Image (tube, rainbow, N blue to C red; front, side, top):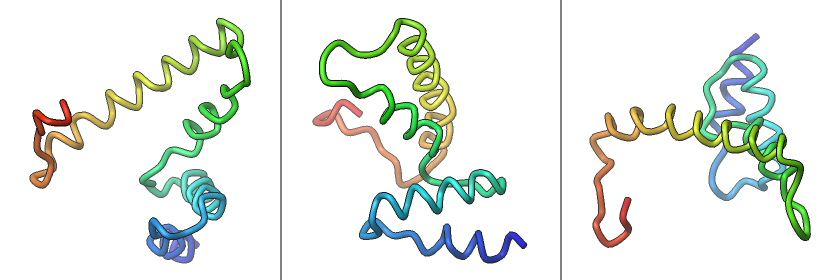
Length: 92
């Protein structure tokens, strides 16, 4: 049952429409397949956008916690990648 879902997730390219990409990654994430983009984080960031002053303090706190978890999970993976390198020009 996971084969078709994994094939869909592998078929996503940068040229794929963002809504289609998010739908595929949401399906893959629900099935337990690792994804390049976390659909829950995307939904939280998209939901926090408002025209003026932002959301409630509780929502901002949850969003900042999600971002910290994202960074904590991503840093070891990027550090272990041999293609990743620190660029002083980009400060990252």
